[in-house]
Length: 252
Image 1: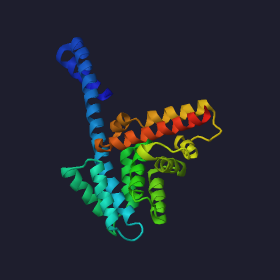
Image 2 (image 1 turned 90 degrees about the vertical axis):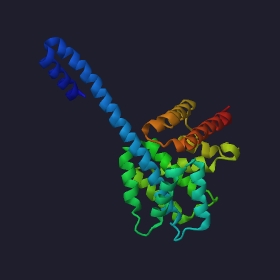
Image 3 (image 1 turned 30 degrees about the horizontal axis):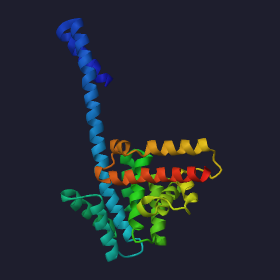
Image 4 (image 1 turned 135 degrees about the vertical axis):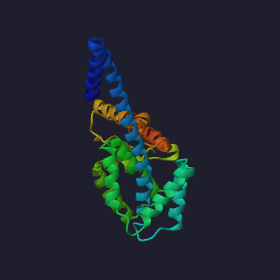
């Protein structure tokens, strides 16, 4: 942006002297901002495209983790297409990516690394990617050991810790009807917020506010979360809130 401002000022000076310098500099600043916004918009678009492609390619590999893709797993993928309201070109692209992930030559680590690079270390976005995978393989109520190991492998490829994976699993495991944690899920509630049971009230509240800020659907969308995944992002914030309320009730 500084270079564009200097260019504008230089041309302004050449054309109209000092007044032109001022006007050129102002126009250069505006132009620099426009270029910056355009580049940012292009980056977000690439992240969204990569997010969808990588999500279903990795999902295809996940389904084949135990050696074969069953009809139930194919039905699960179709259910995910519906849940994310994919249609037209997006749905066809998702199917193609899913089928690509099932092939023997699919490079899981390279796919995950490419997405992680595109996402530029945005941890909430990376966590959402992992949450989609977790939701998919847990759709039948059972996570195979091979799937669990592959999930850990994906988490490592994204640069996420075991603790972050455990929090996502706690969100999934602690949700009852409508996503509301049961009375037996107090331990999971602490895990969701990433705090110890002996943490102070202030520490619990701080963790809750931080997670809510990081996982706000609008913030995730601005970083590249596809609009089709907004509902899952909203569900995640509800689960965080439910966990905080469960802890608050237990401490009252």
